[in-house]
Image 1 (cartoon, rainbow, N blue to C red):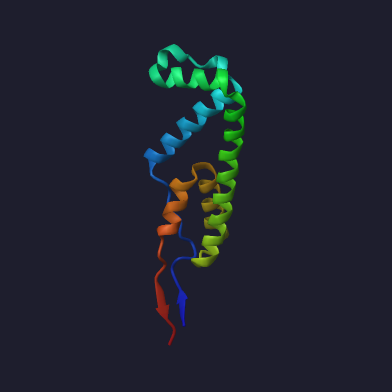
Image 2 (cartoon, one colour):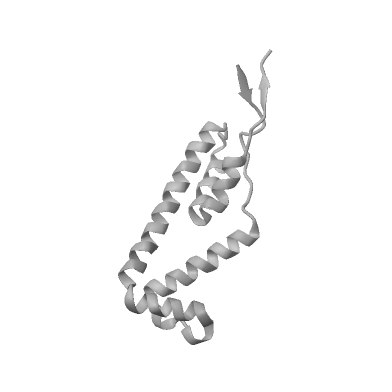
Length: 124
């Protein structure tokens, strides 16, 4: 039976590109749901036209989708805690960082944790 070593404090930040894309997307989505009059639709081309259509005709769907997206992020963050335990990440700080990063950035963070393969060493 092997034991996990060297992974107790494992944490890796998400790529800056995905953090930026997710932050800007959620920020835009937040504006569309809560402050739709603050968006300069005409200046955004097809994205503005599409957003204006959704705000005018499907605002309830936008609102529900917004909270569903956050609910999915909560689920991903909780799953990150399960993965931390499974992969032998026992350090409280590392686990908290995984939880927070996955809550905010979702699959961009969770995919790193899923791909992580801790080294296993045989006990003698």
